[in-house]
Length: 278
Figure 1 (cartoon, rainbow, N blue to C red):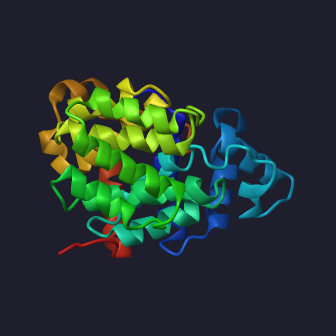
Figure 2: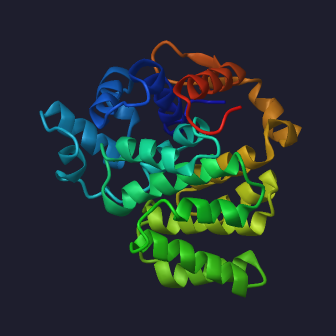
């Protein structure tokens, strides 16, 4: 798997838990970014937060100072690891995600990461995409624009016979948002889950067909479905070409083996007593 900024954050989140532990702070996340991420390989809200750190601004003001991207999708793409280490425990996953997101995002930008992390954690214990969406929804404020958008998407999925018709309704209501904003992209993930029927390929392809920030929505959708069905159920044509390898800019990781990253994630989760382990 070629290096991608989204995946750098997943590997770095694992490093943060391995070094700082479960009580890590937003400042710990900031330190990890400064030590591990090249400035020219991060974007939008993350780049602004990084610049603010260099200028001596501390979290959470790093997210609020001259940051027009603070409700974009950047925090949501960092959600995965927090869900992986809290299987069956959406609340814990959302708590970890909040501390991470607060470095670069505010309001719905934070809620997007909390929702995704909680949904991934729930997917480890559930086998129904609708229940997974609802589990994430339960961990963000009931009254916020993101929650409204998720509820709208679920209602349209109930009312529309096809994904295309539901996606038209999303664009009619939320199409004015920037294509990288968290709200329409979360709608794309929700519809992909609901119309994907728990199938990895169909779910990812539906998320990508929506356009907008496709590498992010496809990845988050795949993360949730993969967590739900388990590694053994993933189609070989999607997994085998990766050759169990992930390139990352995180120092000391290089070309990491996906299987070893997974094993480290399990060890961290067990050591931190996150989630439901026998």
